[in-house]
Amino acid sequence: MAMPGHRTKIIAKKMVEWKLQYPKKCLKEQKKRGLNQLGTLGGGNHYAEVQVVEEVYDEHAARIMGIQNIGQVCIMIHTGSRGLGHQVATDAIKTMEKKMKKNKIPLNDRQLCCARIKSKEGQDYLAAMSAAANYAWVNRSCITYLTRKVFEQMFEKTAEEMDMELVYDVCHNVAKIEKHIVSDGKDDGSKDGKNVQEKTLLVHRKGSTRAFPPNHPSIPKDYQSIGQPALIGGSMGTCSYVLVGTNTGMENTFGSTCHGAGRALSRNASRKRLKHTEVLQHLKDKNISIRVTNPKLVTEEAPESYKDVSNVVDTCHDAGISRKVVKLRPIAVVKG
Image (tube, rainbow, N blue to C red; front, side, top):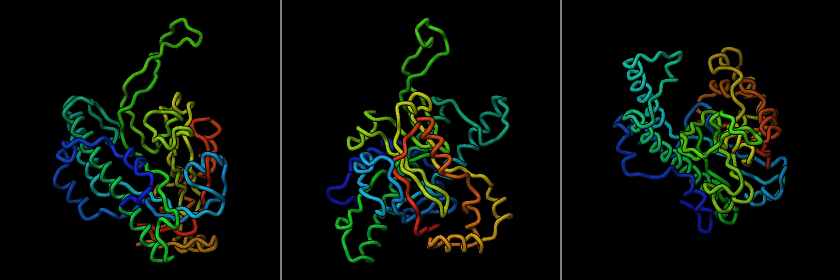
């Protein structure tokens, strides 16, 4: 489904390393839930947005990404492994919770249950999670393909003529095996007083996204000079950002930055406090078109339900864990 001449190497680099045993670790019910959902957005904070570039902070990095100027139209797609991934997590929580009870390990929150990486439970989950991550990648690829087809029909031009290249595809809410420089906390008598060494770690990013620095071997060749792109989606009706990773982030946050604004209100609180008619009118007043399966559910994703994404991004930028490249403003929103 990739277009001729497009950055297919970037797409390929984003898949979790494939092993034949991964799908075998997905249970029948997990596969059943994902079977009919391929190529769909899903609910919650998942969306497809038509956006325009509003500000460019780093012209060099933006050009490398194919973003040439203010006013350029982009499409941002945020979705994942759908029911398959949800079922994988649900089943793993049940299995690990039982194991922890058997081992008499208390929990404050059942969703914090865990297993040793090399245990059967740990290995089974990592395999199923990897299969779900690859499903999510294919799901986004399908939606990207369908998006290009819609634009071709609408504007009577080919996707190539409209330069609809992929900027980046990256997953979050996933655990990845990576190498990082860490300190053991002991004073070795050196200038900085730290005894550091490279270790292999399992880094689990929840509510954050990977943002490796320039020249990191895991970054596609196209982006070696600027760092790994990080796609930061704003709440519905607010701006989004594209950032790049930094060396400071690699040292301080295991090469991670924010994934989005983060919720200010729970979904339940949003439904109680906000009126869907007012949210829809607010979007209309900002000249933002929206298509949603259930209009009443827009309260859950209203701007008031989230923190200010610009403040969050500025904090990451000022802390040096990522750098701002472009700011994008939505003009059309599609919700699952």
